[in-house]
Image 1 (cartoon, one colour):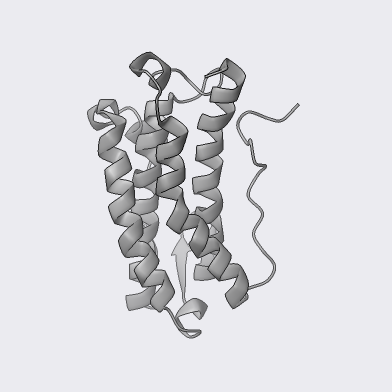
Image 2 (cartoon, one colour):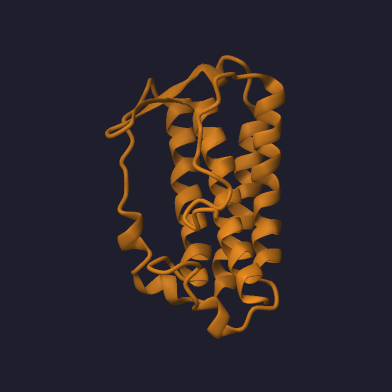
Length: 173
């Protein structure tokens, strides 16, 4: 049985950094807002407030988490592109998921994700080979090359979309 925490498997940092691989990851990010919207389409408020697994976040919290997380990543990319190996600030995503704005209708975060990814994808597609060699430093994880960060967030979007689609499948929604 698949671990419900990781419906598409755990993230594995790619060992290669090719333009083709980066293009696939950028395409994942480009499609993530539409895929997340499709994953929640037609769900009732009660279904949206259902945890995707025992002890897990609700669909609502997952939907609000994705733009929170991707916004942080977008800013980390901009910092890495404009500063020399900046140290980024982590955030307490579990606590963010409990803040009052995580109770808003999911449409708010779906729109936010669409607009954020529109900007992020333009930025990513504009990067040359020198830009892809840039890094930032995560206080807990160490140096993070931008291609690895891109792969992580391409996975992250698919990971959380799969939380919703796996729940729908399990519940027959």
